[in-house]
Length: 300
Image 1 (cartoon, rainbow, N blue to C red):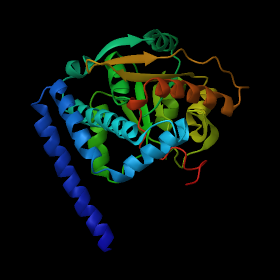
Image 2: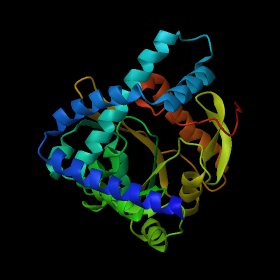
Image 3: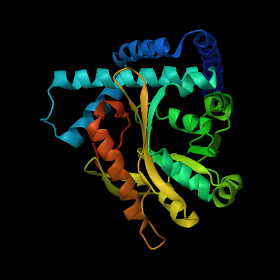
Image 4: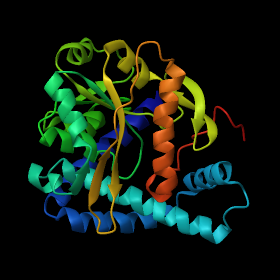
């Protein structure tokens, strides 16, 4: 009983903090906020002891224990937290900003013709991505372009906080679906209305998964995108935002895979894991290394 009460108090104060930040952020230009987020990301890194241990562990698993010195790991961690800070502050800003201001964060788009082709055919598309760069910009930007966009995610621990976090997406018409609930509306959208559905697949969670290589190491990976694409005959591709040196973003949409109903789920999952792995290996500091990605396949 005491624990539930304390959680309610904690959640109440979190809601107040979020509203306060949204109010303050409304008056600050997004570029200045992004730089401020980088500063707070670095500041937070000094106290995030558990997260830093996980990052170092993941680096050792992927690259080998002798690849980086302690100083190189510390430098990498700071770069990584700069990215988290920027992404968080930008996401809060999104929820209170005019559409045009957010749209202008993405300066170059590669592969938009694949979305346009799916739209013209009235065919759904499964967009697979990772916690990479500022992934939250992807559905919002694509919605600005006029596509029918939805995202699947885990519902947060508090309804009010969940609604506040989702407001950045839903205020412009992005549909948010709970990954743990079968949505009849989502199924109808996929079958009949050409829904473009975004799904994150780069974490070891309790959803249906298979073991396939990720960054060259066996890892538990969600099968949801593969099952949906095969069942609904949807296009399926990977897509990413990439943070540029000037602080703006490129949106990269890869060519959809050529799959059919005879392809195994493992084969399709490996396809999108390979794409994500290539992107991370090319720009490692922009991926969320602080998740215990290999907890099901490599025991501490």
